[in-house]
Image (cartoon, rainbow, N blue to C red; front, side, top):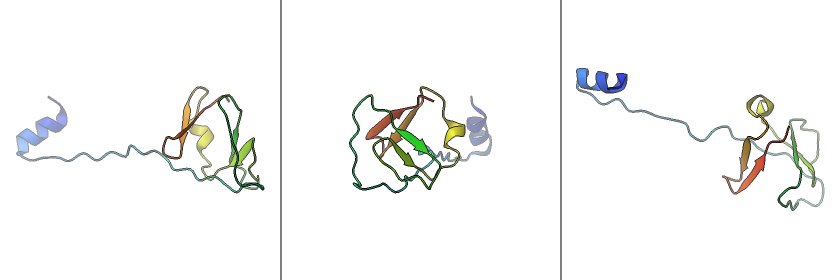
Length: 90
């Protein structure tokens, strides 16, 4: 029996559990003209925390300064609620 279940039984109460499954939200920066880019599987694409960088076919800035502290090669980055997936190379 878990500690939570034991306390619930001992005190005849229910203990709700709340979890944040979303993870951090990252907003990308501005793009050079044109504002739309197309990537295909295998294309390298960089994400930088340097907000002065204007995005293009190869790079975009983001507002999540701690991104590099949370990622390792092989990790996945999901964008647009999981519709786009990137694999971290370095």
